[in-house]
Length: 115
Image (tube, rainbow, N blue to C red; front, side, top):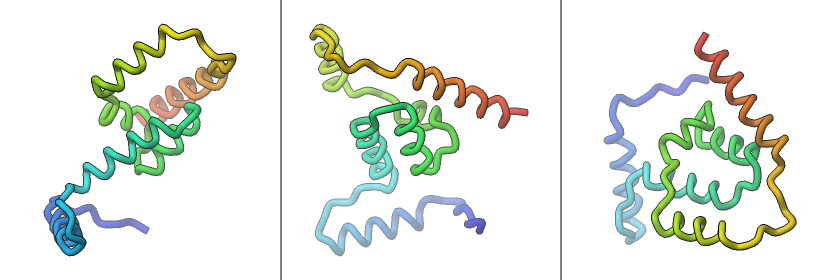
Protein backbone atom coordinates (compact mmCIF):
# COMPACT_ATOMS: atom_id res chain seq x y z
CA UNK A 1 0.00 0.00 0.00
CA UNK A 2 1.44 3.36 -0.99
CA UNK A 3 1.14 6.14 1.53
CA UNK A 4 0.94 9.65 0.06
CA UNK A 5 3.89 11.82 0.99
CA UNK A 6 2.94 15.14 2.54
CA UNK A 7 4.36 18.18 0.83
CA UNK A 8 5.05 19.74 4.22
CA UNK A 9 5.87 18.58 7.72
CA UNK A 10 3.46 21.17 9.15
CA UNK A 11 0.54 18.72 9.72
CA UNK A 12 2.62 16.23 11.71
CA UNK A 13 4.27 19.03 13.65
CA UNK A 14 0.81 20.31 14.61
CA UNK A 15 -0.19 16.82 15.77
CA UNK A 16 2.98 16.55 17.84
CA UNK A 17 2.53 20.05 19.28
CA UNK A 18 -1.07 19.30 20.31
CA UNK A 19 -0.16 15.90 21.79
CA UNK A 20 2.75 17.27 23.82
CA UNK A 21 0.62 20.18 25.03
CA UNK A 22 -2.22 17.81 26.03
CA UNK A 23 0.29 15.72 27.98
CA UNK A 24 1.70 18.81 29.70
CA UNK A 25 5.11 18.29 28.11
CA UNK A 26 7.38 20.67 26.24
CA UNK A 27 7.21 20.33 22.45
CA UNK A 28 9.73 18.20 20.59
CA UNK A 29 9.59 18.08 16.82
CA UNK A 30 9.10 14.71 15.05
CA UNK A 31 12.68 14.67 13.80
CA UNK A 32 14.06 14.90 17.34
CA UNK A 33 12.32 11.61 18.17
CA UNK A 34 13.89 9.94 15.14
CA UNK A 35 17.28 11.31 16.20
CA UNK A 36 16.75 9.80 19.65
CA UNK A 37 15.91 6.42 18.10
CA UNK A 38 19.12 6.50 16.05
CA UNK A 39 21.19 7.24 19.16
CA UNK A 40 19.46 4.40 21.00
CA UNK A 41 20.30 2.07 18.11
CA UNK A 42 23.94 3.14 18.24
CA UNK A 43 23.96 2.02 21.87
CA UNK A 44 21.96 -1.21 21.54
CA UNK A 45 23.16 -2.66 18.24
CA UNK A 46 26.03 -5.11 18.60
CA UNK A 47 26.79 -5.84 14.97
CA UNK A 48 26.56 -4.21 11.55
CA UNK A 49 23.59 -6.46 10.80
CA UNK A 50 21.82 -5.25 13.97
CA UNK A 51 22.34 -1.63 12.93
CA UNK A 52 21.22 -2.36 9.36
CA UNK A 53 17.96 -3.78 10.73
CA UNK A 54 17.60 -0.76 13.03
CA UNK A 55 18.21 1.57 10.08
CA UNK A 56 15.62 -0.23 7.97
CA UNK A 57 13.17 0.07 10.86
CA UNK A 58 13.67 3.84 10.67
CA UNK A 59 12.60 3.66 7.03
CA UNK A 60 16.08 4.03 5.55
CA UNK A 61 16.73 1.76 2.59
CA UNK A 62 20.48 2.14 3.06
CA UNK A 63 22.30 2.07 6.38
CA UNK A 64 24.58 4.78 5.02
CA UNK A 65 21.60 7.15 5.02
CA UNK A 66 21.38 6.67 8.77
CA UNK A 67 25.11 7.24 9.20
CA UNK A 68 25.22 10.28 6.93
CA UNK A 69 22.13 11.89 8.43
CA UNK A 70 22.73 11.04 12.10
CA UNK A 71 26.31 9.85 12.24
CA UNK A 72 27.86 12.70 14.20
CA UNK A 73 29.34 11.58 17.50
CA UNK A 74 28.73 14.07 20.29
CA UNK A 75 31.83 15.58 21.87
CA UNK A 76 31.19 13.90 25.24
CA UNK A 77 30.76 10.49 23.61
CA UNK A 78 33.78 11.11 21.40
CA UNK A 79 35.87 11.70 24.53
CA UNK A 80 34.56 8.50 26.11
CA UNK A 81 35.43 6.51 23.00
CA UNK A 82 38.94 7.96 22.76
CA UNK A 83 39.57 7.32 26.47
CA UNK A 84 38.25 3.79 26.06
CA UNK A 85 40.76 3.13 23.29
CA UNK A 86 43.56 3.54 25.84
CA UNK A 87 42.23 0.63 27.89
CA UNK A 88 43.27 -2.94 27.06
CA UNK A 89 40.72 -4.70 24.92
CA UNK A 90 38.58 -7.39 26.42
CA UNK A 91 38.65 -10.85 24.92
CA UNK A 92 35.65 -9.84 22.83
CA UNK A 93 36.77 -8.84 19.40
CA UNK A 94 34.65 -7.60 16.54
CA UNK A 95 33.71 -10.22 14.02
CA UNK A 96 35.80 -8.93 11.13
CA UNK A 97 34.18 -11.36 8.70
CA UNK A 98 30.73 -10.10 9.71
CA UNK A 99 31.77 -6.47 9.24
CA UNK A 100 33.29 -7.23 5.83
CA UNK A 101 30.16 -9.12 4.80
CA UNK A 102 27.92 -6.19 5.83
CA UNK A 103 30.08 -3.67 3.98
CA UNK A 104 30.15 -5.84 0.84
CA UNK A 105 26.37 -6.24 0.98
CA UNK A 106 25.89 -2.49 1.35
CA UNK A 107 28.16 -1.87 -1.64
CA UNK A 108 26.22 -4.41 -3.72
CA UNK A 109 22.95 -2.77 -2.70
CA UNK A 110 24.13 0.73 -3.59
CA UNK A 111 25.43 -0.45 -6.98
CA UNK A 112 22.21 -2.25 -7.88
CA UNK A 113 20.11 0.78 -6.96
CA UNK A 114 22.31 3.11 -9.02
CA UNK A 115 21.90 1.04 -12.19
